[in-house]
Image 1 (spheres, one colour):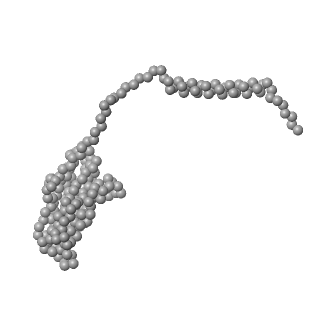
Image 2 (cartoon, one colour):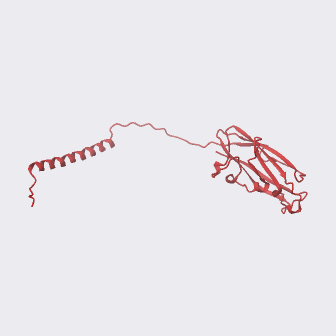
Image 3 (cartoon, one colour):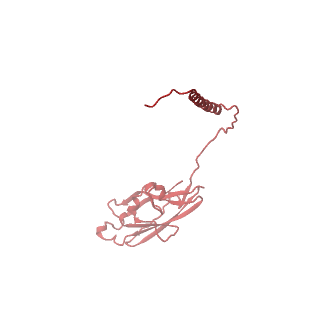
Length: 204
């Protein structure tokens, strides 16, 4: 059986020294923390009255707002007509631009003229239209979020046309009465008409 002996005097001295060292370290940490939070010398400077305001965005069209962009009468199947509008960003900031529509009205209301009017939209006389569809298709684009533009993406602001500050862009609309519109099944008759409002909206 192993013998056990009580700790000697030397062991007690070492234990006491270790405990004392630990207490000193704790006291030092407390003193350092206290010293950092009660600095005796401070200096400050302040700037009162700060005011933040938003800028304004300006977008204009030529022809001007409220003016007819495109008007045609007496169209026969296969006939086309075109109209252009120059949109100017009068702001310093670049804008995300979309095109959408409202208030499609066909007369008589039973006419399918909008379904037989083919529409293309090009930018700055570019060869490939960025919108191709019927007037009825364009009429389904009724807000900025689903409006048409030159690019596509998941987020509404990712599928917009960029227009730099103090720059302009010209959009050309070409409308063609479908060559088959004269067939009775197409429900288009002489004297039918269609009107629609086109909106150009820019957002920063």
